[in-house]
Length: 217
Image (cartoon, rainbow, N blue to C red):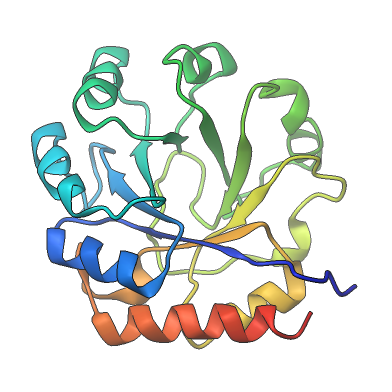
């Protein structure tokens, strides 16, 4: 169903260079993400992210991504980087996620046999979440896999904003938006020349593809 004046939010994730952040802001993205997950190829430490964050333009959110990081490490990132949103990809529970006083997204692994019951009870398990992020990674894994998942598995009746992630590229994001109509889209590998190194042309084409899909409404 068409939604007049609807605009799909865009989050680019996995930044390691200030110049890439600057270009993303110029292209009009809504948020940029820094990855602190221990095993990620795009991992940065708090001091690096704090320096890169200086390139952030006004009205663009910064997001800190974690996967089962210790609470002290999360608090250090919150203190140094001052993210406006946290994103949790591990087994973190509701109490842990809300304990840092920063709005958060809970990433949901869609690349394994996540049960329909687990998907249907997201609001019960994470009542304070600002929203959800459906990604193609398997349980216990992290995002940035470059693989899509079966979008029809996204549960009906989601009452909070949600982002679609996993395998999105400039070539398929328009189709994804038309099929799912998410609140936002999240991309890392689909706009890179190598992990953590963004490709300016891919970033530009991704944004153009999202806006093209929005114009169909």
